[in-house]
Structure formats: C-alpha cells, structure tokens
Image (cartoon, rainbow, N blue to C red; front, side, top):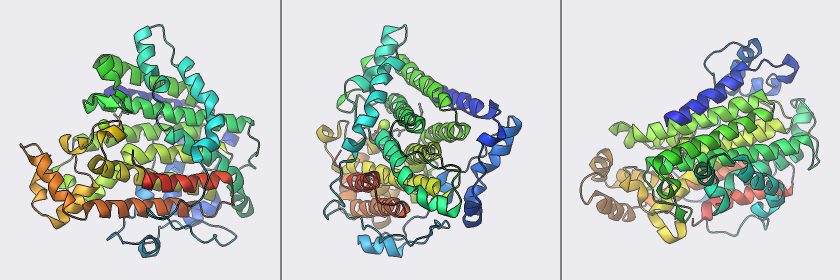
Length: 454
Ligand code: FPP
Ligand code: MG
C-alpha cells in the first residue's frame, strides 16, 4: 500500500512539475461552465497551479462527488429505473434532441449484435504484446512475476476494451461539441493517427494499473487464486508480488508521461490515488460505515469505477476534446456508472457464483469481513444481520448464517436493480453520441456487465 501511494505521489509530481506552454492547456469549455459549475470547479481549478509550476495539493473532484445519485428505493423494472431516478445536476448540452433511450434489461435480448471485445481486439494487440517487453527487467523472477497475468491468463481485458471503444466513439461523437463550440480541436478520424496511438497506449496503461492493483490486492486479501490461476504472491512471495506490482506501476507511469498530456497524467494519477483510498476505506471502516449503502458505493467508486471513469475521460481528452466539454463529460459519466454497475455485479457474483466459474474463491467477501450490496439490502429486512456486519462476520458461523439469511431476502434482486440503474445511466450518458459501431460496443458492454457470470 505504501509503495502504491509512493507511485501516486510520483505521478502527481510529474503532473505538477511540468510547466507547459499555456496553449497546450485548454480552459474548460464555456458550455460546461454554464451547465455544471460544480464539475468545472473541480479539476480545472488545479490547472492554474500547473501553469505556474506551483507545487500544491491536487484539487481534484472525484466523479463520485458529482454524479452520485443513488436509487431510492430501487425500482423493479428497467423502464421505471430510468424515469423514477432523480436527475443529475449535470445535463448534457446537445443541439439535437437525444435519440430515444435504450432500455437496459437483464432478461431481455442483448441491445445489439456487436462483439465489443472483437471490435477493438486488433487495435489492442500491439499494445498487449508490447507489455511483455515493457516489463522486462534484469531480474528474471521480477520479470516473470510482472508478466504473469499478461502471459498466461489475459483476463477479459475489460478496461482496455472500454478505453479503446470510447476512443473510437468520441471520434464520432464530436459533432455536438463542435456545434456548441466546446471542443478544443477537431478529432482526426483515422485509426493510425498519433491520437489513436496514444489512446491505445492509454488502454495499455489502464490495464497495467489494473493488474498491478490486483497483484497487490491478492497480497492484502491473502487470495490464493486469480483468474483461475495461482496468484502472484502464492507463486513467488509477498515481497516479489509487492515489487512486481510496483514495477508495473512504475512502467505505467513512464508510459503515461510519454502521452505528453498533463491533464491526462493528472487524471490517471487521481485514479491511482482513488484505488489506494478505496482499499483504505475498505480496511478501516467504522461500524456505522459498514452498514451504510452510501459508504459502500463510494468505496466501490474508489476501488473500481474511478479507474474506468478516468480512463474514459482521458480517452476523450486524448481524442482532442476540451476538459469539461460535453463529450468528455459524457465519456466520464459512462465510465463512472459502468464501473459501479460492474462492482455491484461482482459483489452479487461473490454470493451466487461458483469458484470454478469465477476463477477465484466464491463467498470471499464475507470471509474478508466485507458487507456488500446484497448483505446491506438484506439487513434492511433482517435486522439480526446488523451485529454480524458490524463485527465483520468474525464469530464462528457468522459467514454461513449471513449467507442463508441473505438468500432468504430480496438482497440479491435489489442489488441487481442497483446495477441495472447504473448500467442504464451509463448508456443514457452516451445517448447523444451519433451512431457508430463503437457506441454500440459500449452499449453492449453495459448489457454484458449486467448479465455476466464471471
Ligand atoms: C479488487 O477488489 C481490488 C481492487 C479493484 C483494487 C485494489 C487496490 C489496491 C490494492 C491499492 C493499490 C493500488 C495499486 C495501483 C497498486 P476485491 O478484493 O473486492 O476483488 P477480487 O475479488 O477480484 O479480489
Ligand atoms: Mg481481493
């Protein structure tokens, strides 16, 4: 943890230390300022400090502080989920009315036939391949440990796929920004442009950060398996695993600096910061927090959604859009909601999935003392769960009792509704993007998140 924090500080220092020509730092679009003063008042206020080269604390407003609106209470149909929810304070400005919303559903057919992973597989291949070279060190053990998840089991490549799809979708989605005069530049719609290469690199960086965090997470959680394979610390040792995670982070930092975009460096550094904060929140919650759904969602943002959300935001920035422009806000909002939906489903699967399918032990959260959405909803119905949550299921039989009690309530169903709420918001946030395969891919991903079994 301390080492991860050190890497965050290094990245922050990179972000703060660079004095760029003022022309390379775009001011927030006026459209954004008028539509969302709270959002624009977040990160943008750190930009003058960057220009002056002043070393000050980053003034970054996490998306969770801007977009957090939780369903209350969760509704039972997808259609109701879209209409019954409170409006965000942020309304995207578009010149043309948004096309009819796509209604997300867990039971219905997929929204389209696009395979999001296939769509960007070729684009991601050179970056995935080069990770192995990138993490080559003079120490064979460290190299093998750092490469482990890139060589054997690749995982779903969920995060780089989102980043790449968003990179493509914003190319098509720029029209609204341009009409509003909010974009800083016209995106170049060619796959081999420098912009597109940098977006690919961003996808790679996102995956490296994610894998580093998982290697560290398995040390903290003492998890023996990951992605159906032995975890790195089990294969080698805790020391090697911590160093391998650090090393991946270090390499990711170098790649990030090479993007030559100080705003992206700052935003991705904040994603790292959030990962560490999420872990701290998880480890150090008060017993009041342990019972609080808002705390759980905030922690889920830090642990999971922030990396996705900030990668999406960065993809749009690298696409040439100004910070605060409707396209960047839409991208960020998509990532925020999709990330939350992803984590809620992850927590449901921990209850309902089998270890074989998940590639990691099921029921791990309760054993780790974590009360996630299914338990928190169940505790509203079965008050006897509350003392068990507060003592982090430490006493003999607590895990089994909780499991049985939760399955006797609508805790799992309500959690699905919560995930559905966020998946719907993710899809709604990119509704104003013009039609494109990439947009369909992002919509399909939201459906896949809801219906995934592992
Ligand atoms: C998985 O959570 C863990 C994370 C999403 C983030 C872990 C972050 C850290 C360890 C902080 C250090 C960060 C870096 C960048 C090195 P989980 O345990 O709920 O999920 P799991 O079941 O997949 O293990
Ligand atoms: Mg874990």
